[in-house]
Image (spheres, rainbow, N blue to C red):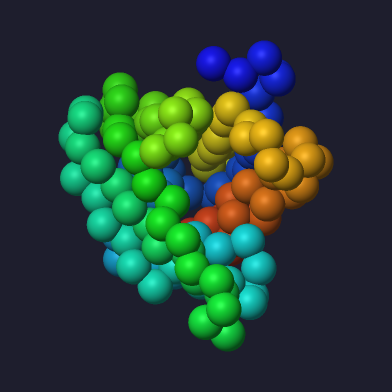
Length: 140
């Protein structure tokens, strides 16, 4: 476990937790929102949404210059309210979805990696969560 404090990003989505969960976990939805900026996309998403199941989300620059797989294993799953997972590099991630008067509060808490600044990581993960929020709002 990292000595650096974990980073948390969050959003309020005007949708029920069940809707938030569905769009956060279904591969056909993940490919629609899983990018931090318009010059990146997620052309492939695969997961086995069970404890110990694997997920692999391909992240690629739209110009084709860069590509990597964001992957790992699911830990505890409590649909539609929480999931934990471990990334391939061993870092832990916690996703929490809470019913609030406005719809759902979603927060993602994660162990930072050591290559990029904490600020850059927070901005990148928040941008992805903001993209998720915009995607879900299309259905409201």
